[in-house]
Length: 149
Image (cartoon, rainbow, N blue to C red; front, side, top):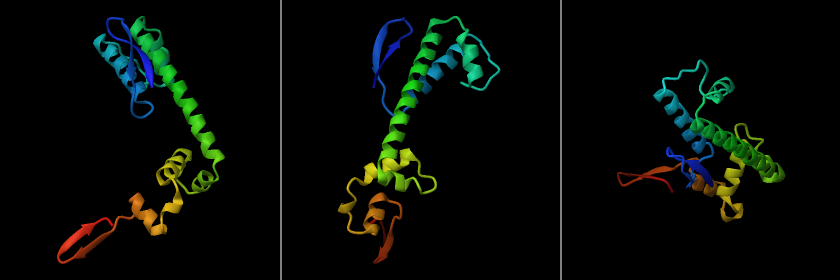
């Protein structure tokens, strides 16, 4: 994903954002914290709670306001992507079945389905378990111990 970014000189540029959703948001939150530390600003509220953000919004600094807009945009994107993921999981009968397992959410179900791909490629359940690494095997032969299949 590309997103706009203003550096300390106010120059508009673009940057590639990689990794998990929310990492870029964390980076912008860090910049706001750094600004507050450098300017000896303290706010009595938990970091990035609604109360905290409301108090930060009144700071008269263009960079802070820019970071807050970026965070708002990223939060909006995260909500949209999460909604799409939930919808896709709800449309797939295999995902629905996986979500009946306690602790498996829509995201985990889609992740499992995508990792397995075509279930027919596994001879039996032990092949699938071995592929997934859920039950690693250990055996010894001639004084040596082997881990894995």
